Length: 175
Image (tube, rainbow, N blue to C red; front, side, top):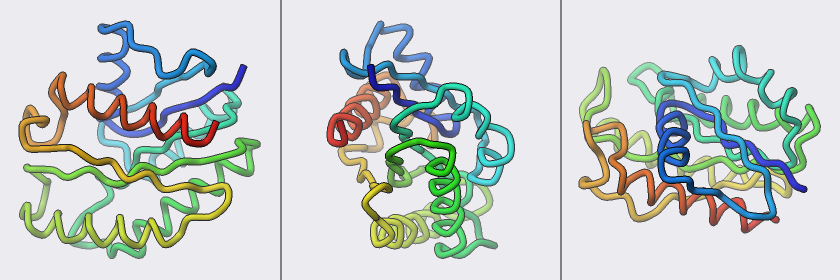
């Protein structure tokens, strides 16, 4: 059976709780693990969570990172370079495919205005899409609206449902 890992920040942590509470399963033909820690940046995942990839040894990793990396002090290129570096590190471990989820919007970003965050997020997602390769796919999350956010950053139950089905569709697209 194929193994997949959904790895990332607090949205992934909350999704893990939601999938347990709703008994939702990503795909019947795929053993899917979900691991997320609040506040994780790309660098922190590389430093602290890469061991999860080694331990599970998934064929597919869905990586949801970048939202906590966006700041005034980092360029879109720096953020995308770090995302791609992490994706390549995961591939070197033996994972066959990495899917990087587009950065999801925030209504209440830290250290910058909503408009500044939105502009940089759009640049990151556009640049990220241009970096796709045979083994690294970029997944564009769609259908997130203001009503899907409980506090401007984290998702409501309905938002988690949208997130779940988006990731499920992404995983299915590479199986």
